[in-house]
Image (cartoon, rainbow, N blue to C red; front, side, top):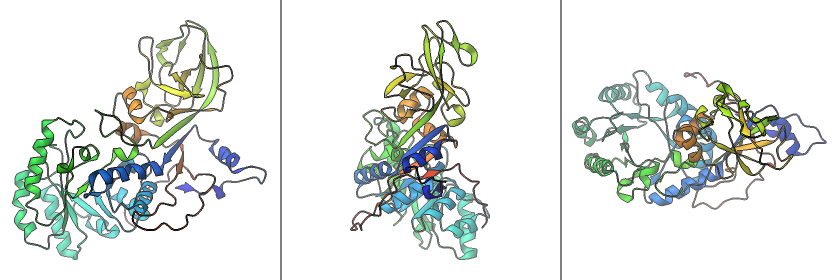
Length: 424
């Protein structure tokens, strides 16, 4: 929950900035999410996919960026459809945005129909047993909230087979079926020349055309950039909204969203030949000045970003300059070599930048040996969270009223409280 800055104990002698600094003092790091950048990314994707509707995938707490905050901002910007992974995720999003359609990618299980109906969200059904159980619930209760059918065209993960999908066509075309979307998922959308893309497109186009009057969706973030044939009636961007490059074979068309800073807790000097960190894998080749930073793999800064005597690790920005990690990343701390900075450029209590100032999610993912999706969703819960922008956004096509003034101090989100129980 984002706390109101007015609720932070304040002294009449302190400025808003000083009060914010005092509130942040208990945190080792600060994660800032730019909601305006998310909105700009969504609008770019929407424009690319016209005339298809552009939805938003906000599962996994909007890829670590805050599902409720992102949902509110995007809904104000005009987004009318959201995708999450679980009913509990849907419950949180519904509390934030009462009107949009919410699809739950995790599917339907027997005896969960009441939960879908309670918050008016839609299961993505990918199995004939799920469909039968959903039908029973709808007939028994008269629920008409809608559901999606997921068809597997090559992922071999979730979804009806093409034969199973073909078998339910008569039921769909008989009317009053309650199916509001038919969808599939691309295997290799980020690879422009993958032959799998064309194969999946042909299979999905053929089967989706038989679902008379039902909107169709195939493209994820990267799929949007494969062109109009892949866009159908609705597109489902996820990672691109949060700044991950959907076109890794070209420059990133998305704006960066996340800025991550962590605090220097100590400055220390080591002599040439001394080792640093667990295992002593990194040895100083000269008299070295180190900054010890209050972040580690418990905060989502992967151990794979470590350096050793033969391999350079990740870098962080200290006083505007890139400085390398020295030694192993540990649970709560990393050491940074700041020897080449001017004297007193870095001091105890200063913040350094781990994401931002030119360090992108995709660059950090490279050092972590993974993808941007995992970087974002792994960001821990020990950061103070600040949201900026998104406060005065109005849907496209409507005149904007006079915007309320944005508070001078952005809201700071405290560590999340436990999720609400499944049943209200």
